[in-house]
Amino acid sequence: MVVCDAYKPIVQEYQRAMEEDFENTSDYTYVQSSFDPFFPFYRGNDIYYAEYDFCDDGLPELLIAVYYEATEQYEETYEIMDAYGTDGVVAERLDSKPLGVVNNYSFCEGNILRGHWASGGLSAGGNMFFQLNPGVAEGTLLDAVYYMGTGDCYRGSRLDESNPISRAEYDDIVSAYKEVENLPIQWELLSDSDFGLSYEGQMEWTESDTIWMI
Image 1 (cartoon, rainbow, N blue to C red):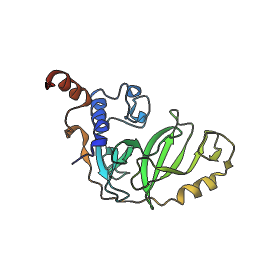
Image 2 (image 1 turned 45 degrees about the vertical axis):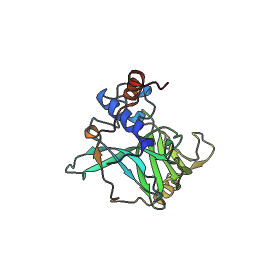
Image 3 (image 1 turned 180 degrees about the vertical axis):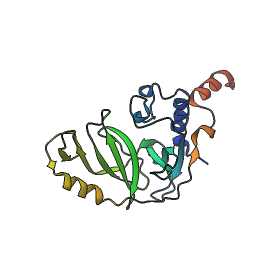
Image 4 (image 1 turned 120 degrees about the vertical axis):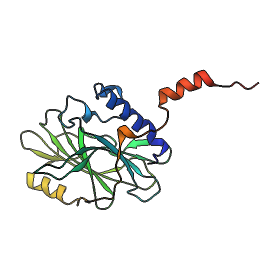
């Protein structure tokens, strides 16, 4: 699969993080912190990537997912745990600045990204909804709702208690965004993919093999 040049540093960093068992996610620029072994969201399953053009603008989004095999209770699934967009030059995480650690993403009708997040101790969480725009790397925040361990729910882009809502209102807001199922995404195993020289490899080649013209 051809990966947009803007995404190559991201997938290369994910490959390096996999080799290091995600021991130091704070040291990475792109790797989602929910892969940190401290959090319960990732359990060492195979990691896949894919490009999918949600906006049909010729600039596909990059998706990083964990594959879970089918069980008696659940069908097999690719759980999207990171998502990036590009304007053709730079790459940015689609959800811009999340309120907490995003555990998984899904896509809703109208090219809307849903990010579900939770705190490390799972005492708080919520959902954010971003509009994906043609030619733009980041999504635009449309709505955000969250809940606390006490059961209280709130609406807004900041973690404060200025706009309380009921649990029923919370559920109505979330259900108003209709998730798109069975998207024809072509997943590729990240560990089996070759994206060329890493950034470090490029620097080594430049320093040792530069030809000076006089």
